[in-house]
Image 1 (tube, rainbow, N blue to C red):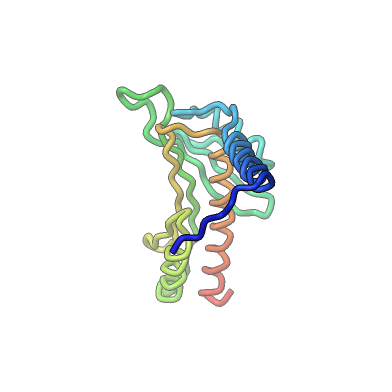
Image 2: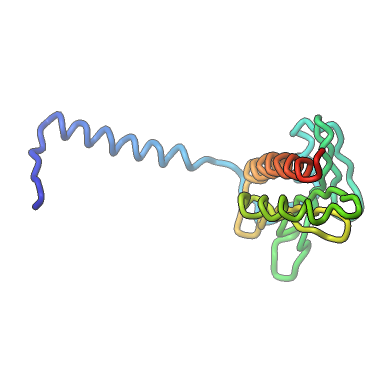
Length: 173
């Protein structure tokens, strides 16, 4: 059984305010930021320079080695660059970090890596030889803003901090 409600003047005013609030919320979600369908090394340099890192060094190719204020080191690398039938520049940005393991640590570390992978979708961690490697890949060819890449980078750093703690706990450090 459905219940019918009378639409009073106050009810109509409330409905209109709610609708206006929805429109205002939608308008606040759409801004006027530049959308990039590919990124250049100069775009990444600008982005990283504004984030207050202790060190940003351009390495070989399209890679940048970064050190945060708390000593965490990771890299940012441009990928799929100057592809045929695509905008000039690179269609992807990869963030990655690694931690070395002591011989015999793999059985202790594997559960931490598996736990991280099940809890975090912002990146993936893998055991490769005597290290843990973690990465996050951003696709740009659908269009992104530099703010979006910055936000992704901040999320990656937070997840990597958690992963680092999980790895330390796993080896008893």
